Image (cartoon, rainbow, N blue to C red; front, side, top):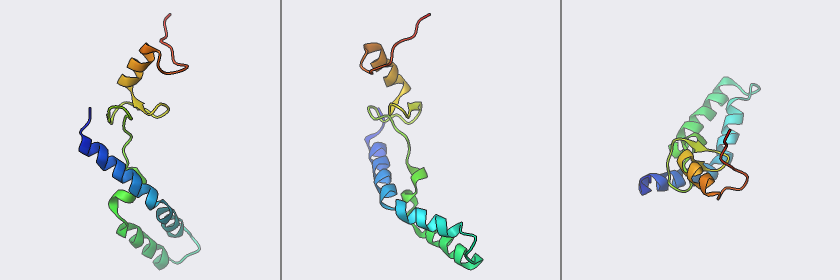
Length: 101
């Protein structure tokens, strides 16, 4: 089980990334717009730097929904490889069966 503070910190980052999503998209579009002058594009880059650090979506870490584990997560299920194996063995994940040959 991951530290509760790490899980809460990641939740705050998710919330902040969602809040600033439109600002990031608009600033990035203007910063990469070749029709604008170099000074205007540079000014947009400065605006992007002034946004909160945790507001960028790359700061959000994928975590297991059950344990909070950061590594070995399956995006499709939203859980770690360990919990996936446990739940699949118990037959609690529809459509997933243990392979044997």
